Amino acid sequence: MGQRRKSNVQLRSVVIVKWGDAFIDTNDFKAAEADSTSYIVRNTVGFLVAKNQHGYVLCTDTFDDSDDLSAKMFIPHGMVLKVTRLKQ
Image 1: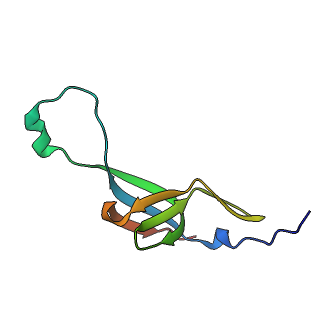
Image 2 (image 1 turned 90 degrees about the vertical axis):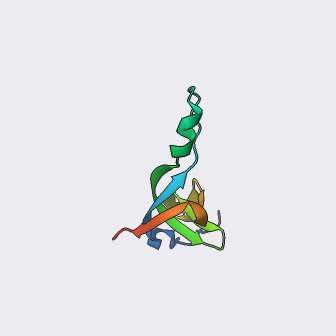
Image 3 (image 1 turned 45 degrees about the vertical axis):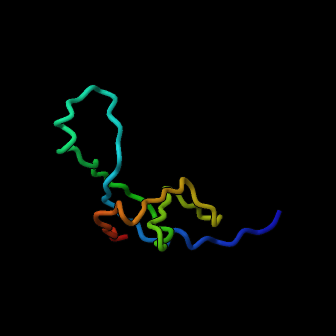
């Protein structure tokens, strides 16, 4: 079995991304309510893997013995309201 190199993924910043998310509500509503309808604000915590031209890539888990990452999440720039780096 080949030796796996120690990952440096655990050194990544842990961030809270506050972002505006779309939603669906299957309940009936009045057309007048549409004018005041807005996005839902979510706060997502994760390891910051990358910030690219399209947005932020986060993951939920890292592994000490692998460069593999778990549960990729992508949030487009246009949806991001605030990014806060947590102290480690």
